Image 1 (cartoon, rainbow, N blue to C red):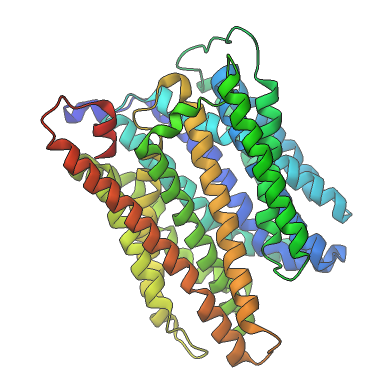
Image 2 (cartoon, rainbow, N blue to C red):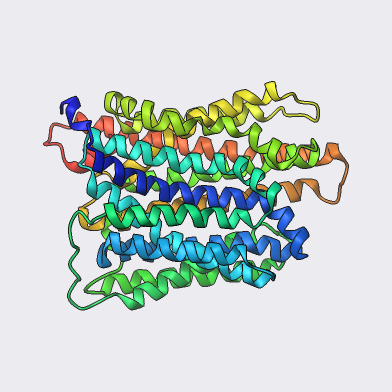
Length: 480
């Protein structure tokens, strides 16, 4: 395919910027809120449980409704779902900024999470539907992934600045950005095709069972952050979630119009991409949480200083749309993805010797490597998770990917929290807290190693497949 096929006209760039702006909005919204939590607690007088619930409510809404959101985009229209839920995101972000009680924040964050669960897979499906497979889609997904990851890193700094003005601006700023994106989307976006409603209607039993299962499993993951708080209840929540998931599988096998075609899970490349996404985001979320505790609680850095220290990770905003597409076009998607995962693992390992008197120069190599890792990993993960998937199931593939992202983030946070709490015990000395954080850092390192092994297996399997003296299939190409 010639280089000219990667060239996009003004309208294509407009569509891409709208969709990239929406995924940037999601990332920056989450990151800004995390920085503002202490100020919110001080102003509203929230308990620790309610404050934790402000974060968990978003996770529950996002993780619980993601699969339903992905399939709804395929069945009801990607543009329609994107626009409607972007408007809901706008409204409830504003309501969060007006909250005067803890319960108001909880409701606002839950509905905002639900909105993101429907909006994200619709946006990704619009990307794959509007940009043809090849260099143009590679470039589009590079820009999309770069802005998505950049939202998380830049949100730390922006959140610190806005919190200094007033924590409510952490909610009002996304309202302004959402309004701009919504107006542009109304003008520029259109579905690549009009999905046909399947005969027999919507798979309501499947929708109810999978949403209930995802909600329970997400709640169980959140409860893991407090290992001593009702272990029996946590196990019961997981058991109930697993039971509903089993019911969902039975429903889908018997449904004439299943919400999720279970055969899509037989794709090795898709499964490996989703496992890689879960482990990669889980490792980064765990590291970011531990690094924030280290810098703010043990070193006494402010939220703004912490955000600036991690700002270098945001280099992926520049590298992902410029360097990564060229590497993918030259070496292939999975080799670039594998390289990014290896770089991430090395970055976490280099942080293991951190101490109470570490200089920023000692931390900088890890921050730089994580910026490179995000640049090489986020976009290729998105490509791997949607490559070879039928156009009619792109929304579903996006829902699966973002479910992996969200559950990976929640699992990463819960795992490092549980390990650090267990390692600390009842000790309070700074040295003991440092050792507990260092012990918990083994979790991101292990998750990165697991992601490397899974991806390397796929690369080797694809290489063997290319030497089989049979006609190449789409699945073999996707796994290479």
